[in-house]
Every structure is written in structure tokens, then in C-alpha cells.
Length: 154
Length: 143
Image (cartoon, rainbow over all chains, first blue to last red; front, side, top):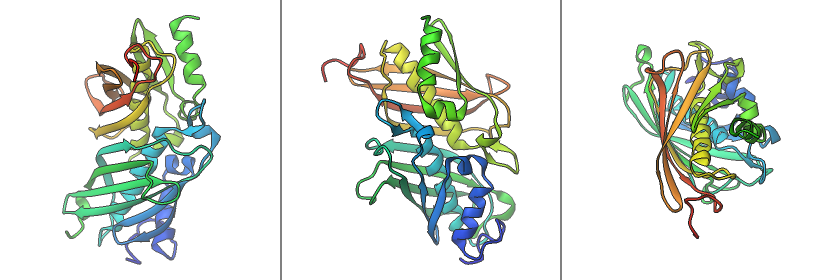
């Protein structure tokens, strides 16, 4: 996996390369998204709590749209991390279930797993939480189209 | 305050709506949210294309706001789930979104939304979702 994101950035590890890819993505950078850990087809990340990302001014809860972007980004990273020859992916669809409001003032963590990748499509799910995934804020299920120029081996 | 002014004030109170740069237009009871293009909204700088999450967020915000108008509620509903279909990549231009309230139940509403750019006919994304109505809404009943 160590060379799998060689197209993005010049970092030494897959984590560095995924973070370089995020730094190259203006909206992910604007939200402050970072990736802390990676594995084959998996990514763990964080979006820090910031007052300007609040969706409900009465409670201080972070906006759903922030989680949508964060989970979309992390799911895309997991899809790329599942490939032997990394390429670009495009989201086909994304479903997000909101189980409960995020806790105001706290960073949101998430883990994404690409549970199936074929020649053309990658299927990825993700869970967002503050502490542990068994107390989820939101769950995402998504499908990504894989750039056909450099297909990954299924 | 006119309905348009009330709407603008409600959106101005939402920090994330300001972060995105969303504006609203209300004609009768039909709402259009406008997301003026800005560089920080980009998700793929090579194409370039808007971030899918931003387009999803715009449609969710449109659905929440249209539902607040339709249910004559001062408070915003809470999102239960959203399903976003991406139809074309969002170009680095202004994006618009409208929502249609399909059904308002006692506690839960079903809403559809679409986002488009140059041509209304060529949506770049579609969304449907379920939303929990606030307790003060007309449709929310006693539960």
C-alpha cells in the first residue's frame, strides 16, 4: 500500500499522501479535514469543530453539510486506498443517516471502509462519531465511479 | 419584515450558510437558494469541479428552509436522512437549488431538491430526504 498514492503529493506514507491530496482539495482544506490513519481500503479522519461551521446557532451543533462533505471526502479516500493503481473517483450517490446531533464544541471523527471495489465502481461506508463508532453521529453509504483511464484490478 | 427579509435574517444567523456564501430568493412561497461560485467550494481542482459535499449541503439547506416555510415554522427542522444523486460535475460557476415538499406528516416530512447551474433542465444533482419537524410547526402535532 505504501506506493499506492504516489500520484498525490510527495509524502513518505499513505497517510501523508492522503493528507496531501486533501490539501489539494480547497473545500476539504477549508473545513480543516485531516486523515490520521489509513489501511487497505480504509481511512480514519477528523473535521475540527469551528464556530463558523455551526448549522444551528441556538445549540451550536455543527451543520449537516459539514459532515456530508467530510464523509464524502473520507469515503473517496477509502475508495482510492482500496486500489492497486490509484486513480481519481467521482461520487455517484451518497446517503447519510443522522442518528443524533453532534456534540457542540467537539471535533468529529470518522472512519470509512471501501467494502467492495470492482473495475468501475467502489462501494464505501463510513461512520462519524466523537469518541467511538459504537455511538455514531451519522452513517454514510456511497458509490463512486472509478476513472476509466487507469482502472484498478478488482 | 417581509418574508424575504425574514428568510435572509434566518440564513444570516446560520454560520455554515455564511461559510458557504449562500443567498436566498423567495417568490411567493417558492424558494431558490443561490450559491455564488467561490474558490474554496472546489472539490476537484483538476477538472475543476465543486465539492460534492457542498452541492449536497446546498440541497439539504434548501430542503430545510423550504420545509420551514411550508410548515410555517420559525424553527428549522432536523435532518433524519438525505440521499444525494450526482448527475454531472458542478462547474466553477454559480449554483442554484430548489426543493419540493412531497409530504408533511405529523412529525416527519419528505422533501426532494435539485441543484443546477446554467440550465434549469440539466440538474447537476438531486436529493431526497426525511426531516423531523420542530414541535412548534403546524404539521408537528403533539408528538
